[in-house]
Length: 231
Image (tube, rainbow, N blue to C red; front, side, top):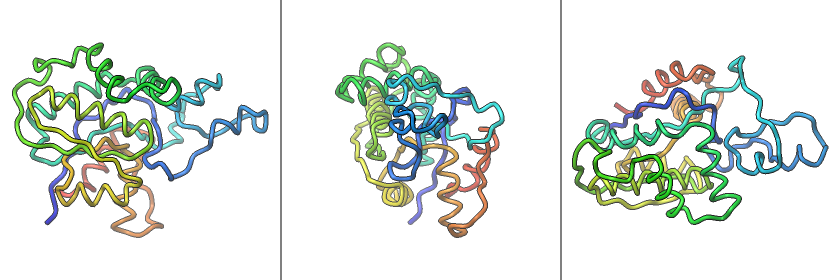
């Protein structure tokens, strides 16, 4: 059977983030650092790019689709303590913070669980008071296997555990594997990327050449995403 899904409120202020799949493309920051190119397409939260001193330009013309981080959850979790804490986490994930988190794991080789715990503590989200109530039941948090998404899954699971849920995490190599698991109810929460997921579902329904429904404006992308998710 198909599980109804919901996209929890997205942090509108967050700039476009990492790609939604570990294998879906994008340029390596190494290409620009070797003086082989003057401009390259990289992800704005890429810790390696930042460590090489590359400057990320502002997309003031909205040429890139708005790939803001958005938790996608089973609809049963779209209200209550789970939604409260996930929204609170996303409100803290501005571009600077996300880059710091990625650097802590991807460059400085910190343990994801330790980085997650420190982030929640510094953000004031490590106690049950941040949950708006006491949660219960089991939640499996899925994520893609690349650094940023796996770390977000670890953060979500730790925070949800603090809210009273029994949590576990599973990582997957591709969206083609974890999204069906989410739809089938084998996962309850996945950290996603608004534009990438919107187009993924659209292409699953309408073919690989289906016109993109994502936009450079996050509100427009979120409206399209919510329409694509199983209801």
